[in-house]
Amino acid sequence: MLYFENDYDRGCHPLVLKKLCDTNLTPAAGYGDDEFSERARGYIRAACEAPRADVFFLSGGTQTNAVTIGGLLRPWEGVYAAASGHIGLHEAGAVEFTGHKVLPLPQRQGKIAPGELRASLEGFYADPNHPHMVFPGMVYISHPTEYGTLYTLQELEELSDICNSFNIPLYMDGARLAYALAAVTDVTLPDIARLCDVFYIGGTKCGALCGEALVFPQGAPERFLTLVKQRGALMAKGRLIGAQFEALFEDGLYFTVGRAAVELALRLKAGLEKRGVALFMDSPTNQQFPILENGLLKRLAERAAYSFWEARDADTSVVRLATSWATKPEDVEALFKVLDNLRGGV
Image (tube, rainbow, N blue to C red; front, side):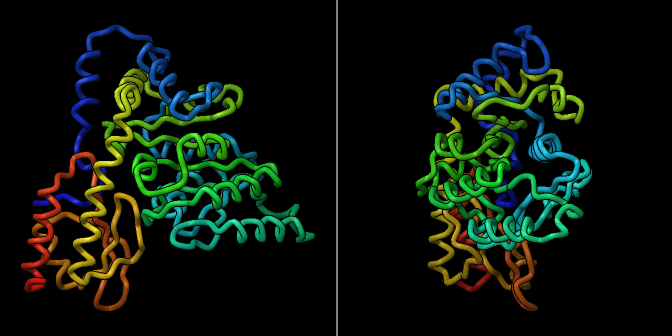
C-alpha cells in the first residue's frame, strides 16, 4: 500500500526521534520550563528574527487554534476566516466551543482577499445595528491554505495593514508552515513574524511526533501560559515538544523537511499533468488535488491511501495527495505506475 493520505501518517523524522532518545534519561523541569524547550525558543527567535518573541509549545493544532483564538477574543467578539478555513470546517466547532463565532468570508483559492476583508469590516461598523452583533475581533488565515495555496507578501502586508487599521490581531495557522517556506514564494519566516501578531509553527505535520510552537513576535498577553494549561493544551512533560523543536531548528532540519516534501509534490504534480489529470488548484506546496473518476478512485483505494476532498460532479471527485518528510521518490513513481495501470496507460 502506498500512503499519500496526509503528512502525519508516520511517527517522526529520525533526527527528531534521536533527540528524544538521547535526552530521554536527562531529568528536566515540567511544563516547558526545561533546557530543551528554552534552547528551542532561542533557535525559533533567531529564525524569526524576533528576539523579543514569546514561544509556547502546545500539544496540537486544534488546541493551539482554540486556545489562541478563545484566549485573545473578548466575549462579544468572533474571528474572521475563509469559508474553507480549518477552524470553520475541520475542528469540530472547537472555536465555537470557547464561546466565539467563526465569521466566514468568501474564499479565493482558499485565501481571504484583502479588499473583501476591508469591505466587511467597514460594512460592519457602518451598520447602525452593529452594537447588537458579533464584533469581528481577529483575522485567521492559514499558510498554506486548505488547498495548499500561499499568500503573497503583498497580500500578507495588506491584511496586516487592515488589521492594524481596525486594531484587531492577525493570526496565522502554520500547521504546514515548513512546506510554505520551502515553496517558491516571496514570504519568509521573518516576514511572518513582522506582519502577524501571533502565528504557530507546525510540528505535527512537519516532521515532529506531536506538538506546535506558538509565537507572539512582540510578546504574549499576560498569563497566557496559565490559559494554555487551563484549556488542556499544556503538557506536564513539555520537554517532549521542546526537544523535538530543538531538533527541528538547531541545524535547519525544519526547512530541509519542507524542501524534500515540496520537491516530491512538484514531481507528483508534473506527472499527473503529463498524464492529463486535471488539478483542482494550482498548489505549490506538499498537497496536490487531482480530479479523478469515481470508479477509478474505488480501485485506487486498494493500492494507495488518499484523502477525499469534495465531489466535483456526479462522476468525478477531488482528492488530496500529500507528501511529507517520509515520502520517497520511489513512492511517487510507484503511484504513477498504479495510475497508469488503472487508466490503461498514458
